[in-house]
Picture 1 (cartoon, chains in turn brown, orange):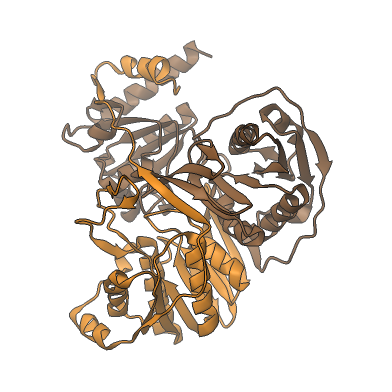
Picture 2 (picture 1 turned 180 degrees about the vertical axis):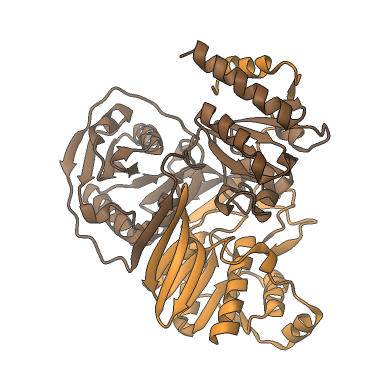
Length: 320
Length: 248
C-alpha cells in the first residue's frame, strides 16, 4: 500500500507541478503511515523526485508516448496503482492531468475530487477541501471509495524538500490503443503557460487596443510571467481565446496576479480568486477589482506600467 | 448522426454564492439558473451539425423537475427532444453513470458535454462517461469537424493547442471556441412556442451511488482592504511585493 503520484514532464524535464504533487503526496503518506511511489513518463531526472518525498519512481521510457495521450497515460497510471496496491492517487490540475483523471477514475473505480487546495483534513473518512463555484467557495468532500484520486490545484501546496532519495525502476506496462491520434501541436515554446505560471500579468479593455500589448509582454518577461487577458479582450479578438481568464475561460491559481486595465467583473474575479496576491492598476477608483486586490495603483496604465517595468528591472539588477 | 448534448443546470455567472443548513447546502434563494456556459457552446455546435449535416440533437440533464426550464430553453434553441433523468445530480461519477445509460439506450454517435460545469468545476463527467461507454474522448475541445465516422478536433492545451484525429462514437468536453460567442443562439419567440410542443421525457434513474460526498461548504475568508500605492511611487509597490507579499 502506498500513495501513487503521477508526475508530469515536458521534453524530459519534470514540471514544477510534478514536484508539488510529490510534496503533497508525501504529506498524505505521512498522515496515512505509508510511502510515496511516483510514476514518470520519459523524464530525464526522475531521481530528483526523491528530494520531494518519493521513495520509488516507476519510470516509463517509450518514444511512442512523447505526445501526451490521455487514455494511454491513464492506463499506465492504472497499471501502476494496481501493482502498488495504491489507496490514493495524486495528480495535478494541468489540462493533461484533468484530461486523464476521469478515465483513471473509471478504470480504478475510484472516487475523484479535483481542484484540491490542502492536505486532507482527515484520512478516515478521507476528506479534502477543494474550490467550488469557480473559486467563489470551497467544499469539504469525503471520498467514499476504497481507492481515491486527488487532483491538486497548482500552487496551492507549494514545494517541500525532504532531502530523501528515490529508487528509479523501469516500468513497462501494456498500453492500449488510444483511439485519439495527435496530428499536430501548436505551442509557443518560449512562453510561460498560464497553468504553469507563478506570476500572471493580465490586460483588459483599459489597454485600448492590441497594439498596446507590448508593455504587458515586456512586464511579463521581466517577471518570468505568463500573459493573460479579460473576456472582452478575447471577444474583441485583441488576444487569443487561450489567454482569457475567468469563469468561462482559464482558471488562474498563481502566486501573483497583476490586473492592468481590468475593472473586475464578478466572472473575472471568480476565475482568478485562487491567486494568492492580486495587484490592480486602474484609472477608475470605483473599479470592483480594488475590493478584491491586495495592492492597488490608481493611475493610467500607460504611465504606471512602463515605470513598473523600469523599477522591476532595477530591482532584478540589484538582487541578481 | 445522432447527437446528445449534456446540459448542466447551473447558477448564473453573476450569482453570489451562499449556503444554508449550517453550510451544508447551496442556497438557491434568489439564484437564477442557466444552461452551463460551456454546454451552450456545445449546443450551438450541435445545431450547426443538425443544419449542415442532417444530425438529430437530443439534450439531457440529470436532475429534479426544477431543471426543466433549462431543458426547455435548450429545446427553444433548437434541440429536437429532451431527456431528464429524474434524480439529483450528486457527484460527477453518479451523473456520468446515469448519462452512460441514456447514451447506451439511445445509441448516440456523438456526445457533446461542456468542459466543466461552472458550479463544481470538476471537469470529470465527460471523461468518466467516455470511459464507461468505451467511446473516444477529447477534453477542452475548441473545434470539431465530423466526416462520416471520422472526426477531427482541436483541443486547448496549457500554452497552446493540439489537433487530433479520432472516430465516432466520441465524447467531447467542449468550451468557448467550438463556436464564437457571437454565434451563440438565443431562443426566439417561435423557438419558445415550438419548444412547448417538443417531447421532454422523464426517465427514472439507474442504480448509481455517488463516490464522493460534499459534507460542508465555506466561503473564502474576508479580505482586508486594498493597500493603495501612489502612482508616482512605484518603488513602494516593488518593495511591498518583495518584502511583504514575498512574491518577487
